[in-house]
Length: 318
Image: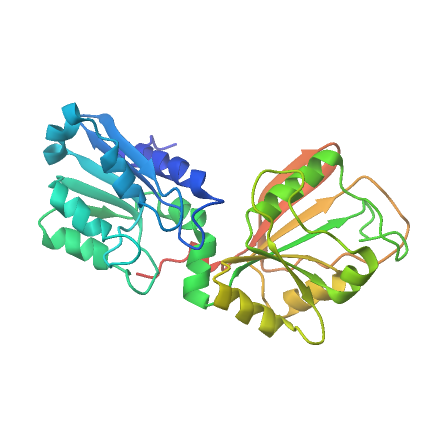
Protein backbone atom coordinates (compact mmCIF):
# COMPACT_ATOMS: atom_id res chain seq x y z
CA UNK A 1 0.00 0.00 0.00
CA UNK A 2 1.41 3.37 -1.05
CA UNK A 3 2.06 5.68 1.93
CA UNK A 4 -0.11 8.78 2.10
CA UNK A 5 1.65 11.96 0.96
CA UNK A 6 1.56 15.16 2.99
CA UNK A 7 -0.67 16.73 0.32
CA UNK A 8 -3.14 13.86 0.70
CA UNK A 9 -3.05 14.07 4.48
CA UNK A 10 -3.91 17.77 4.54
CA UNK A 11 -6.52 17.36 1.80
CA UNK A 12 -8.15 14.62 3.86
CA UNK A 13 -8.42 17.14 6.69
CA UNK A 14 -10.12 19.54 4.25
CA UNK A 15 -12.69 16.88 3.41
CA UNK A 16 -13.26 16.17 7.10
CA UNK A 17 -13.85 19.86 7.81
CA UNK A 18 -16.10 20.30 4.78
CA UNK A 19 -18.46 17.56 5.97
CA UNK A 20 -19.47 19.74 8.93
CA UNK A 21 -21.52 21.85 6.51
CA UNK A 22 -23.72 19.01 5.26
CA UNK A 23 -26.99 20.43 6.59
CA UNK A 24 -26.24 24.16 6.34
CA UNK A 25 -24.41 25.05 3.11
CA UNK A 26 -27.00 23.96 0.54
CA UNK A 27 -27.43 24.95 -2.23
CA UNK A 28 -23.74 25.84 -1.98
CA UNK A 29 -21.13 23.06 -1.94
CA UNK A 30 -19.36 21.82 1.17
CA UNK A 31 -15.76 23.05 1.25
CA UNK A 32 -12.90 22.75 3.69
CA UNK A 33 -9.60 24.67 3.71
CA UNK A 34 -6.33 24.18 5.58
CA UNK A 35 -3.28 26.47 5.69
CA UNK A 36 0.07 24.80 6.32
CA UNK A 37 3.52 26.27 6.97
CA UNK A 38 6.64 24.46 8.15
CA UNK A 39 4.74 21.18 8.39
CA UNK A 40 2.22 22.67 10.78
CA UNK A 41 -1.42 23.69 10.33
CA UNK A 42 -1.61 27.39 11.09
CA UNK A 43 -5.19 27.92 9.97
CA UNK A 44 -8.26 25.96 8.93
CA UNK A 45 -11.94 26.49 8.25
CA UNK A 46 -14.97 25.33 6.33
CA UNK A 47 -18.01 26.84 4.64
CA UNK A 48 -20.45 26.92 7.54
CA UNK A 49 -23.59 28.41 6.06
CA UNK A 50 -24.89 29.55 2.67
CA UNK A 51 -24.41 33.30 2.29
CA UNK A 52 -21.62 33.47 4.85
CA UNK A 53 -17.82 33.32 4.56
CA UNK A 54 -16.33 30.59 2.42
CA UNK A 55 -13.84 28.01 3.71
CA UNK A 56 -10.82 30.02 2.61
CA UNK A 57 -12.09 33.16 4.35
CA UNK A 58 -12.61 31.26 7.60
CA UNK A 59 -9.23 29.55 7.34
CA UNK A 60 -7.33 32.82 6.92
CA UNK A 61 -9.35 34.39 9.74
CA UNK A 62 -8.20 31.61 12.06
CA UNK A 63 -4.48 32.33 11.53
CA UNK A 64 -3.03 33.93 14.64
CA UNK A 65 -1.12 37.22 14.54
CA UNK A 66 2.03 35.34 15.50
CA UNK A 67 1.67 33.04 12.45
CA UNK A 68 0.73 35.67 9.87
CA UNK A 69 4.39 36.17 8.78
CA UNK A 70 4.43 32.48 7.76
CA UNK A 71 1.80 33.03 5.05
CA UNK A 72 4.51 33.95 2.55
CA UNK A 73 5.81 30.39 2.71
CA UNK A 74 2.48 28.66 3.32
CA UNK A 75 0.47 26.18 1.26
CA UNK A 76 -3.30 26.54 1.13
CA UNK A 77 -5.25 23.31 0.73
CA UNK A 78 -8.88 23.54 -0.39
CA UNK A 79 -11.20 20.68 -1.33
CA UNK A 80 -12.94 22.62 -4.12
CA UNK A 81 -11.55 25.22 -6.51
CA UNK A 82 -11.64 28.75 -5.01
CA UNK A 83 -14.37 30.91 -6.52
CA UNK A 84 -13.41 33.68 -8.95
CA UNK A 85 -16.71 35.57 -9.16
CA UNK A 86 -18.56 38.07 -7.00
CA UNK A 87 -21.58 36.39 -5.43
CA UNK A 88 -22.79 36.91 -1.89
CA UNK A 89 -19.12 37.06 -0.93
CA UNK A 90 -15.98 38.37 -2.74
CA UNK A 91 -13.86 35.97 -4.84
CA UNK A 92 -11.74 33.61 -2.73
CA UNK A 93 -9.15 33.43 -5.51
CA UNK A 94 -8.48 37.16 -5.01
CA UNK A 95 -8.22 36.67 -1.25
CA UNK A 96 -5.62 33.93 -1.69
CA UNK A 97 -3.59 36.09 -4.07
CA UNK A 98 -3.74 39.04 -1.68
CA UNK A 99 -2.30 36.91 1.13
CA UNK A 100 0.79 36.14 -0.94
CA UNK A 101 0.97 32.42 -0.18
CA UNK A 102 3.55 30.22 -1.87
CA UNK A 103 1.37 27.36 -3.10
CA UNK A 104 -2.25 26.24 -3.46
CA UNK A 105 -3.46 22.63 -3.61
CA UNK A 106 -6.99 22.05 -4.98
CA UNK A 107 -8.95 18.84 -4.57
CA UNK A 108 -11.17 19.22 -7.63
CA UNK A 109 -12.38 21.78 -10.16
CA UNK A 110 -15.71 23.52 -9.51
CA UNK A 111 -18.35 22.57 -12.16
CA UNK A 112 -20.36 25.74 -11.50
CA UNK A 113 -20.48 27.71 -14.76
CA UNK A 114 -19.12 30.91 -13.18
CA UNK A 115 -16.04 29.14 -11.84
CA UNK A 116 -14.89 26.10 -13.93
CA UNK A 117 -11.16 26.70 -13.76
CA UNK A 118 -11.23 30.49 -13.52
CA UNK A 119 -10.20 30.50 -9.88
CA UNK A 120 -7.21 28.29 -10.58
CA UNK A 121 -6.26 30.43 -13.59
CA UNK A 122 -6.41 33.64 -11.56
CA UNK A 123 -4.16 32.23 -8.84
CA UNK A 124 -1.63 30.90 -11.37
CA UNK A 125 -1.55 34.21 -13.21
CA UNK A 126 -0.49 35.80 -9.93
CA UNK A 127 2.60 33.59 -9.94
CA UNK A 128 1.42 31.15 -7.27
CA UNK A 129 2.06 27.44 -7.81
CA UNK A 130 -1.18 25.44 -8.07
CA UNK A 131 -1.59 21.66 -7.83
CA UNK A 132 -4.96 20.22 -8.85
CA UNK A 133 -6.51 16.78 -8.29
CA UNK A 134 -5.28 15.64 -4.86
CA UNK A 135 -7.83 13.10 -3.55
CA UNK A 136 -10.00 14.22 -6.44
CA UNK A 137 -12.41 11.27 -6.32
CA UNK A 138 -13.07 11.78 -2.60
CA UNK A 139 -13.55 15.52 -3.08
CA UNK A 140 -15.97 14.97 -5.93
CA UNK A 141 -17.93 12.36 -3.98
CA UNK A 142 -18.30 14.79 -1.08
CA UNK A 143 -20.16 17.21 -3.35
CA UNK A 144 -21.82 14.68 -5.66
CA UNK A 145 -25.21 16.36 -5.20
CA UNK A 146 -23.85 19.79 -6.14
CA UNK A 147 -21.92 18.37 -9.12
CA UNK A 148 -24.91 16.45 -10.49
CA UNK A 149 -27.22 19.46 -10.12
CA UNK A 150 -24.93 21.74 -12.13
CA UNK A 151 -23.85 19.16 -14.72
CA UNK A 152 -27.14 17.43 -15.46
CA UNK A 153 -29.53 20.23 -14.40
CA UNK A 154 -31.44 17.90 -12.14
CA UNK A 155 -31.20 16.88 -8.49
CA UNK A 156 -29.02 14.02 -7.32
CA UNK A 157 -31.52 11.18 -6.93
CA UNK A 158 -31.39 8.47 -4.27
CA UNK A 159 -33.83 5.56 -4.33
CA UNK A 160 -34.59 3.94 -0.99
CA UNK A 161 -36.72 1.01 0.02
CA UNK A 162 -37.05 -1.52 2.83
CA UNK A 163 -37.89 -5.11 1.96
CA UNK A 164 -38.69 -8.22 3.94
CA UNK A 165 -36.26 -11.13 4.17
CA UNK A 166 -38.24 -12.84 1.39
CA UNK A 167 -38.22 -9.77 -0.88
CA UNK A 168 -41.54 -7.96 -0.34
CA UNK A 169 -42.32 -4.32 0.40
CA UNK A 170 -45.39 -5.15 2.52
CA UNK A 171 -47.46 -7.98 3.94
CA UNK A 172 -49.86 -9.10 1.19
CA UNK A 173 -50.59 -5.49 0.27
CA UNK A 174 -50.83 -4.22 3.84
CA UNK A 175 -48.22 -1.83 5.19
CA UNK A 176 -45.94 -3.44 7.76
CA UNK A 177 -43.00 -2.24 9.82
CA UNK A 178 -39.78 -3.64 8.38
CA UNK A 179 -37.13 -1.37 9.90
CA UNK A 180 -35.79 -1.77 13.42
CA UNK A 181 -35.60 1.27 15.74
CA UNK A 182 -31.91 1.68 14.87
CA UNK A 183 -32.29 1.33 11.09
CA UNK A 184 -35.25 3.72 11.23
CA UNK A 185 -32.88 6.27 12.72
CA UNK A 186 -30.51 5.69 9.78
CA UNK A 187 -33.38 6.38 7.38
CA UNK A 188 -34.01 9.70 9.09
CA UNK A 189 -30.33 10.56 8.82
CA UNK A 190 -30.59 9.85 5.09
CA UNK A 191 -33.65 12.10 4.84
CA UNK A 192 -31.84 14.94 6.59
CA UNK A 193 -29.13 14.83 3.92
CA UNK A 194 -31.65 15.43 1.10
CA UNK A 195 -33.49 18.58 0.10
CA UNK A 196 -36.70 16.91 -1.09
CA UNK A 197 -38.44 13.56 -0.66
CA UNK A 198 -40.84 11.87 -3.09
CA UNK A 199 -43.53 9.21 -2.71
CA UNK A 200 -46.21 7.97 -5.06
CA UNK A 201 -49.90 8.76 -4.73
CA UNK A 202 -50.85 5.22 -3.63
CA UNK A 203 -48.28 5.23 -0.83
CA UNK A 204 -49.46 8.65 0.31
CA UNK A 205 -53.14 7.60 0.37
CA UNK A 206 -52.53 4.21 1.98
CA UNK A 207 -49.86 5.04 4.57
CA UNK A 208 -49.94 8.84 5.00
CA UNK A 209 -46.18 8.88 5.71
CA UNK A 210 -44.83 11.93 7.53
CA UNK A 211 -41.47 11.72 5.67
CA UNK A 212 -39.82 14.06 8.14
CA UNK A 213 -36.80 13.86 10.43
CA UNK A 214 -38.00 12.73 13.86
CA UNK A 215 -35.19 10.43 14.92
CA UNK A 216 -32.21 12.48 13.72
CA UNK A 217 -30.94 16.03 14.03
CA UNK A 218 -31.27 18.07 10.86
CA UNK A 219 -33.75 19.67 8.48
CA UNK A 220 -36.73 17.72 7.16
CA UNK A 221 -36.84 17.43 3.36
CA UNK A 222 -39.59 19.07 1.31
CA UNK A 223 -42.35 16.50 0.73
CA UNK A 224 -43.52 15.84 -2.84
CA UNK A 225 -46.29 13.44 -3.88
CA UNK A 226 -46.19 12.01 -7.39
CA UNK A 227 -49.65 12.13 -8.94
CA UNK A 228 -51.41 12.51 -12.28
CA UNK A 229 -51.12 16.29 -11.89
CA UNK A 230 -47.53 16.21 -10.63
CA UNK A 231 -45.45 13.86 -12.82
CA UNK A 232 -41.71 13.21 -12.58
CA UNK A 233 -40.82 15.92 -15.11
CA UNK A 234 -42.68 18.45 -12.98
CA UNK A 235 -40.89 17.16 -9.88
CA UNK A 236 -37.48 17.59 -11.52
CA UNK A 237 -38.41 21.09 -12.72
CA UNK A 238 -39.56 22.07 -9.24
CA UNK A 239 -36.33 20.83 -7.70
CA UNK A 240 -34.27 22.83 -10.19
CA UNK A 241 -36.39 25.95 -9.71
CA UNK A 242 -36.17 25.71 -5.92
CA UNK A 243 -32.44 24.81 -6.06
CA UNK A 244 -33.04 21.54 -4.25
CA UNK A 245 -29.83 19.68 -5.03
CA UNK A 246 -31.01 16.23 -3.96
CA UNK A 247 -34.15 14.11 -4.10
CA UNK A 248 -34.85 11.00 -2.02
CA UNK A 249 -37.44 8.63 -3.49
CA UNK A 250 -39.03 6.38 -0.84
CA UNK A 251 -41.74 4.60 -2.80
CA UNK A 252 -43.90 2.84 -3.54
CA UNK A 253 -42.99 0.13 -5.99
CA UNK A 254 -44.50 1.77 -9.08
CA UNK A 255 -42.71 5.05 -8.39
CA UNK A 256 -39.40 3.33 -7.69
CA UNK A 257 -39.66 1.14 -10.80
CA UNK A 258 -40.56 4.11 -13.00
CA UNK A 259 -37.46 5.96 -11.78
CA UNK A 260 -35.32 2.90 -12.48
CA UNK A 261 -36.81 2.44 -15.96
CA UNK A 262 -36.18 6.11 -16.77
CA UNK A 263 -32.59 5.89 -15.51
CA UNK A 264 -33.31 8.64 -12.99
CA UNK A 265 -31.20 7.57 -10.05
CA UNK A 266 -27.64 7.99 -8.81
CA UNK A 267 -27.66 6.04 -5.57
CA UNK A 268 -29.79 3.23 -4.09
CA UNK A 269 -30.20 2.33 -0.42
CA UNK A 270 -31.84 -1.02 0.32
CA UNK A 271 -32.70 -2.36 3.75
CA UNK A 272 -33.48 -6.07 4.05
CA UNK A 273 -35.17 -6.85 7.36
CA UNK A 274 -35.62 -10.06 9.30
CA UNK A 275 -39.41 -10.31 8.85
CA UNK A 276 -40.86 -12.83 6.36
CA UNK A 277 -44.40 -12.31 5.06
CA UNK A 278 -44.68 -15.08 2.47
CA UNK A 279 -46.22 -12.70 -0.04
CA UNK A 280 -46.97 -9.10 -0.88
CA UNK A 281 -45.75 -6.41 -3.24
CA UNK A 282 -42.41 -7.54 -4.73
CA UNK A 283 -39.45 -5.24 -4.11
CA UNK A 284 -37.94 -3.62 -7.22
CA UNK A 285 -35.18 -5.51 -9.01
CA UNK A 286 -31.74 -4.04 -8.37
CA UNK A 287 -30.48 -2.39 -11.59
CA UNK A 288 -27.56 -4.12 -13.30
CA UNK A 289 -25.65 -0.85 -13.77
CA UNK A 290 -25.05 -0.34 -10.05
CA UNK A 291 -22.12 -1.26 -7.86
CA UNK A 292 -22.04 -1.88 -4.13
CA UNK A 293 -20.37 0.90 -2.16
CA UNK A 294 -20.99 -0.51 1.28
CA UNK A 295 -22.81 -3.30 3.11
CA UNK A 296 -23.65 -2.99 6.79
CA UNK A 297 -25.59 -5.16 9.22
CA UNK A 298 -27.53 -3.77 12.17
CA UNK A 299 -29.88 -5.81 14.38
CA UNK A 300 -29.83 -8.53 11.74
CA UNK A 301 -30.92 -6.02 9.07
CA UNK A 302 -28.73 -5.75 5.97
CA UNK A 303 -28.21 -2.20 4.65
CA UNK A 304 -26.84 -2.09 1.11
CA UNK A 305 -25.59 1.14 -0.43
CA UNK A 306 -25.24 1.19 -4.21
CA UNK A 307 -24.38 3.80 -6.81
CA UNK A 308 -24.59 3.91 -10.58
CA UNK A 309 -21.39 2.74 -12.22
CA UNK A 310 -21.44 5.77 -14.54
CA UNK A 311 -22.13 8.28 -11.76
CA UNK A 312 -21.48 11.87 -12.93
CA UNK A 313 -19.84 12.57 -9.60
CA UNK A 314 -17.06 10.11 -10.44
CA UNK A 315 -16.17 11.61 -13.82
CA UNK A 316 -13.59 14.29 -14.43
CA UNK A 317 -14.81 17.08 -16.70
CA UNK A 318 -12.29 19.93 -16.65
